[in-house]
Image 1: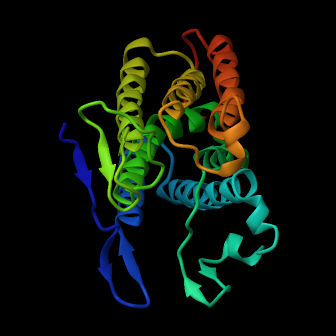
Image 2: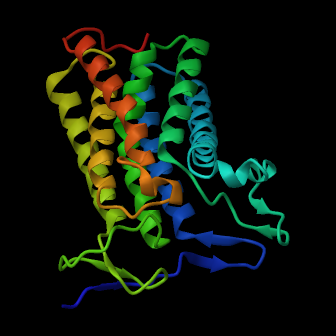
Length: 271
């Protein structure tokens, strides 16, 4: 059986001291599209560009910082507890000094970081918290989908061995046909983006419902897709559910609770 041989370079341009990578480009692309859409939404609701720029700053900083801390604390603390500076700096100091970029970002950490940042933002600028969370939730799956495409270009977060006809052979990893788990996840996130847009337009539930539905759909998909992924870190080998699945459960429960509480027509204004 012929499988899809996957051997792209993760690097687009190498300038020696700096490398433009597909992951960085796709990550930035997702954020930029979300930026353009949300800026229009904020303007339509009477929110100044100045407040929106503050929103953008909160989200970008919280995404990167939360995702980075999430990876270091949840997945690789055994290493980073002895290399604390490497958590916040894009360099390795041992065995020699090397620019690495931020290799290791965890979506659960990024989600938690953005959630905290947006709550602070809504209080600081006196915009209704659930309105802010809904608008961020509408575009978050789109960004997440682009990030997983970046993972695909890096041949990372690979799937388990399989013989399905659409299996990928990640030549940068090994010669084993595997589930393209990154592609599964990207497709799931793009579908969730469409579902959220349709529900938001057709059902017009009060502020907060879309945010709850986002949590429920995205992290339910994450639990399912994790079953097709290869183990990311060695300590997961003896776990009934891996770290990604365990971390998804509280988000699913929170999403269900928020949906139940906010499941009625009502307030959809920003102020």
